Image (cartoon, rainbow, N blue to C red; front, side):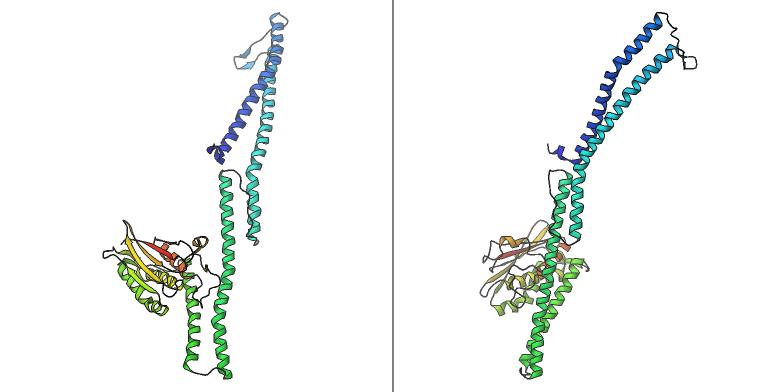
Amino acid sequence: MKSINRLSVRLFLSSLAVILIGFCVLVLAIQLSLPLTYGRHLGLMEQMMSGEAPMGMMGQGDGRLGSGRAVELYDGFRAGVNEALVYAVLISAAAAILLSLLIGSRLVAPIRAMTRASQRISDGHYAERVPVAGGDELALLARSFNRMAARLEQIEAMRRQLIGDVAHELRTPLTAIKGSMEGLEDGIIPAEPATFRQISQEAERLSRLVDDLQELSRVESGAYSLDRKPVRVVDLVGTAVSRIARQYEGKGVTLTADLPTELPAVMVDEDRIGQVLLNLLANALQHTPSGGQVVISACAGEKDVVVSVSDTGVGIAVEHLEHIFDRFYRVDKSRSRATGGGSGIGLTIARHLVEAHGGTITVASEGENRGSRFAVSLHRG
């Protein structure tokens, strides 16, 4: 039954039905008209044989008909057959038109619905959906259309969230810098090194945000090149750990590297994958409270090497796992860059860089306050 739902099969069966109907109508029309025609012709034949008129010959010499009643006999028979064919053609055409209208309306209706829905979506109504019925190609197209519309709706929501996030992220340091400068001008805030360090820190936050946005734009558009070469995993992990170790010490979180003695090299761009590991370690630090632990480990497979970053932090609820790599997505909407939550750019950058290497990045968590684990799979060198 599943194959009958396919559009191509349905069209074939429809055409076959039209042919069969036409054939049956033709046979029926001939059978209905033939007795009358044959009886009429038989009467003429009997008259000819009784001597009322010479029968004549058909197709003599040059192929022309004979004269008299023979011509009348031929013309009558031909007229009967032509009459039957005309009836058959008319009835078959009517049946074909009705079937075409019926099937065409069923085929065109969902396409028209998708056309109207696409126009609504182009006008900004991203919640528009089309009804789905059946299991043929049109139903699959309708489902794909609805998935596309849902994705566009999600992207639009993320775009609005992006504007709000960027505005908030920019406003916070700008407000602090503006307040400090006004305080310095009015003499309320003393012009001492601590004040200038605070202003410098806020300016640095602005700079990091701009750098993150620029990096995100590059990786999403693929506007960068990869310098791949065999690199030892131990060196990648060691470089990332050394760059972020001081931040872990400052927060009181233990960072441990658990690596086998023998690990194959991976074919990667050392700087880009180093950035991925650094982003994962920074993310783990942000979501692990003081006294917690983060472990970066690795294991080798037949074709790849998997590097994992596990933490004992706040964990991730199940409903957030599929969105964790979406740009500017934050599990806790109340957390900002200032409170350590970030803007959700680092993980998005990490995903694009890993996929550019032909690898995969995944996340797993048993739930809130039960930690999380990020795993990066890279091809062996």
